[in-house]
Structures are given as C-alpha cells and as structure tokens.
Amino acid sequence: MFFDDPGAAFANIHRALRPGGRLAFLCWQALELNEHMTIPFATVAPFLSEPPRPGAPEGPGPFSLADPERIRTLLDDAGFTDVTAEPSTETMRMGADADDVAAHLMTHPVARTLLRDATPGIAAKAAAALREALHAHAGPDGVRLASAAWLVTATA
Image 1 (tube, rainbow, N blue to C red):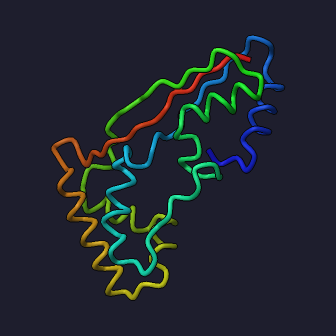
Image 2: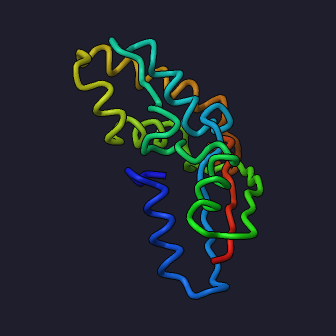
C-alpha cells in the first residue's frame, strides 16, 4: 500500500518468486468501510483547523489498493496470474477500555500531527469527544470497530 511505484514493486516481487510461487497479502478496502479509522477521524475532525485528507487513491497510502480492479491490473501487469481479491471483514478489538483506546489513539503520530497546532484546550475536547464516541462501541469484550480488507492472492 505504501510503494511509491507499485507497478515496479510488484514486478520486483514477481521476479523474486519461483515460477508457480504464491503471493498473498492483505490491504484495506475503502476508508468508509473501516470504522477503526473513520470513527476516530470523524470525531476529531471538527476540532481541527484543517480536516484530514486520506490522500490520492493512486498514491502511496493505506487505501492505495482499495480498488480490487487496480490490484488486478497491477498484478497482471507485473506478470502474476490467478489474481484474486477476496473480501475480509472483521471487527477489530481496539482494546479493553474506551478511555485507554482513546488515550492510545490520541498519542498516535497521525493524531499528534493533526493536532499539533491545536491549543491544549482544543486537544482535550477532541480527546473527550473521542472517548465518548468509543464508549458507544464498548462492550464486555472491549471496544470493537469494523474493518474491511482484501485478501489478495496471485501466482508467479
């Protein structure tokens, strides 16, 4: 997902595999299908002077391979055959306690970057809103948020 030139990267991987070798990886589906990212971003966004941008779909980033047709094209062009992209949806257990999960997310480098220009009061309000949002997803087995990925396989 983070290759500057995914076509060259997958071609290199193809060259490194024996004929008949298998490639398998997981990559995120579309952002809107991944609550573990959308809920924190949507909750914190109103407190930011500039809302977060997910980046260009073709550029390096967590959603650069969200389109299964793009995956197939990249892998086909790299020389792979039997390319499949099967959906994998699970709930992610973010942690046992909403307050702890919120505290962890607020120390994540992305959150620190987004809130770097915020006053301490604004950052505290964003953290409180995030805690409240996560409490809505807390249960006896912890805080759980939906995730959606592609399980990609191909043959060299």
